[in-house]
Length: 238
Image (tube, rainbow, N blue to C red):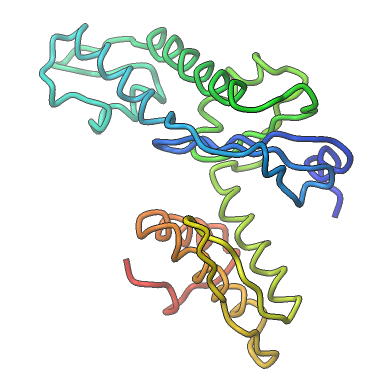
């Protein structure tokens, strides 16, 4: 099925930037969109939490709050979304602070990535992950001709994992994949008697074991929310 992103990746080099909570992952897709340039991918230690910490520091200084008011404070999500906070019965406007810090972190992300890889041949920059929508206005302004945002970019990893699993389910063959430390894990030999969606779920379950408990739970919840698969009682314990 032809899509805006499929067409964009068909014959060009494209950079994918995945903005998470504490890190931002990036990789260059080769023309066709199904293979990575292994000389140009990686991760940087900058994400949404750094933005939260910087905004919290400025709010704390302005309102003379104690150190308990930090980037993990429940009020930070409201401040980032609305630019305002109601404290001690009074509403304070920090929208300019949020805008300033968003630009600072957004530029820091881009500068770090550009310092690590060559980007002269990049036609499009595809932003995904939990932070993609938040930074969307900034990146659209910074890359007016290159920035692309898929629908619900926070679910892009979950959708990609499902497509990856379904690909191997349809292949009907065993496969191996690499995880950190260059370890290889055999997944399992696919049984033609198992329904395709159940095979996909089992592949996802195996792949997710390498991601850690927190991320595994989050991805499964995203898949269920998308109604991509029905976890029922097969969902792994938290």
